[in-house]
Length: 452
Image (tube, rainbow, N blue to C red; front, side, top):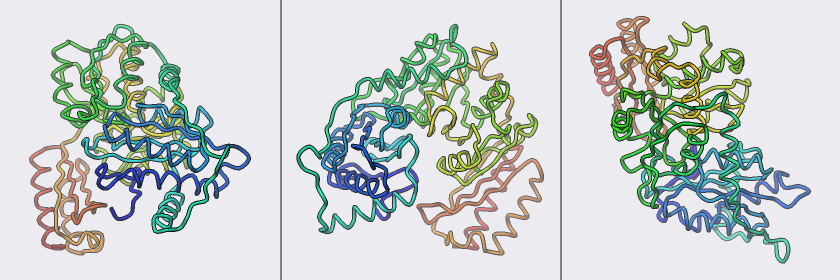
């Protein structure tokens, strides 16, 4: 698998790349590394462990729990809950560590392990590196220090986590959702229980689809990566809007009453204006990535809201927010971070706040989202090229400059080397889709010629 920790924990095909032995070993390593860092000093350590409904999560959870308890950590098993719920409970319960077993929007054969530090925050990169190094050294024969007797960890189920998380979500809402009819697509995932419960308690009349997880059907033709079923259901039921989550419910996309998609950029636009009205948008600033649609940037400029852009990945958005104290950030994919109430993207919270804005204003989601005009965007992957030279090639620079002259202020060009594959991503935005396609095609040819 190369370096085990990626941008969002350790992921791979369950029982092939990500085995029970690895899950146990990484958990023991995490406990030892955090102990050495002083996290457990002066008290018996405690961890919160949750998972999404994947079948493989059952044995991986058992391995993680065994590893932590064998290292002297008390474990609270919260069962099937969203990633942001595990992060929230890690903080709310004063735990020293949180562990979520999920591969998010990936297909069912995959699974993953994500560690949270005290407070529910992502582990620092240097701690992940240390955990990986310790895991590798012990995998190759170095013995563990093992507690015995009363020193071993105790394990118990913590069913109260469901209610605590739902109560937290409802406490954040600025107003109720009475009068709204909402279709929820839960991706047969981790939010299949908590999301319908939260929306119903908030006053909405709900219709649920994709809320019957069987361990095998997570993300299968449903959820935020497959919106067709939600679009059809919203129109069929005459709903005011639809909300779609992914497998671990850290993201949210929406559908308006006509069945049109409302993406993460549009959701950020709606929430930014709502938060500014409540004086909750600190420094009148929102954080997004360089892949955000140009229409989002223009909408924020018109509204007098400052946009800070980061590299692609919600981790970079979160780092920028934490460093400067910003309250709102996110990605086009639907990862939306509301830092006053969550330490990670929270799809259920995002959906609730979006619906609350519809209820508060009496305007349709379509009308609210129209504050931003989504410019046509074309993305071409150029494979089998030397991606390391994309920023230094004179020929590529010349092609980009020519494209930018043609597009002027109504378009944008972005070239980005893939982080995992030997390819370069060419993204072009323009006021007209045909122009975007033509410019993107020419740029892709230039990249292939210069770097192939």
